[in-house]
Each structure stands twice: as structure tokens, then as C-alpha cells.
Length: 119
Image 1 (tube, one colour):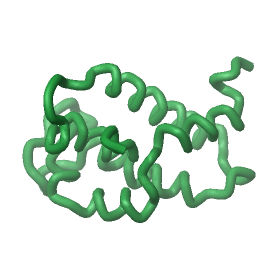
Image 2 (image 1 turned 135 degrees about the vertical axis):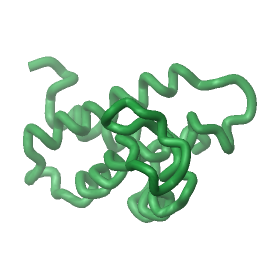
Image 3 (image 1 turned 120 degrees about the vertical axis):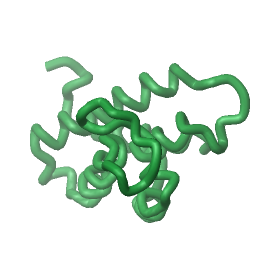
């Protein structure tokens, strides 16, 4: 087993990259901005709220459940989803656009995954 797949290491890194509190993430996921960014599971770009749920918005809901689950009750599937979140955040942080990102689709997409790059 590599360090990247060690459950404790996965949980530690997940806590590190998901830098939004559950309350802040829950409030964010309820906004139109949250619902108007990202890609659908079919690969289509979400451009307005209510048309289709993005993968990131769905994952934000899943992140809330993961954060509420006691560490001892997390399954191998839960750890795999945590690694997916970790990978997404690292990949997208490396793609930071130039300029002010406060109102960017890039930031909003990351926030759907529980990471506010402005924190």
C-alpha cells in the first residue's frame, strides 16, 4: 500500500484540501452561482442553475456526507471518493487563471468541491 492510499493519510489530505466548513459549503451549494458552473456527468458545460447538476455540485453534497461520517466508519469507497476530491483540487489549483479570481468560474468550481482558493 502506498502512502497515497493509506486511509489516515487520505483523511488528513482530504481535511487539508477541503478548506470550507460544512456550514459554509452547505450555504455555497444552495446558491445559483454554485449551480451554474462545472460539467455534467455527460460532459456538457453547466451554464445556468436548474438545467442540470454538475459533477462538482453533486460531489459537494457527497463531501458534506463524508465530513459527517466518523473516521472509523469510512469505507474503501469513501476513501476513493476522498482521493478523487484531493486529485481534483490539486489539478485545478495548478490551472489558476491570471488576474482576479474572486468571481471566476474556476473559483466557483473549486468551491463546489469544498475548496475556496481565496482562503
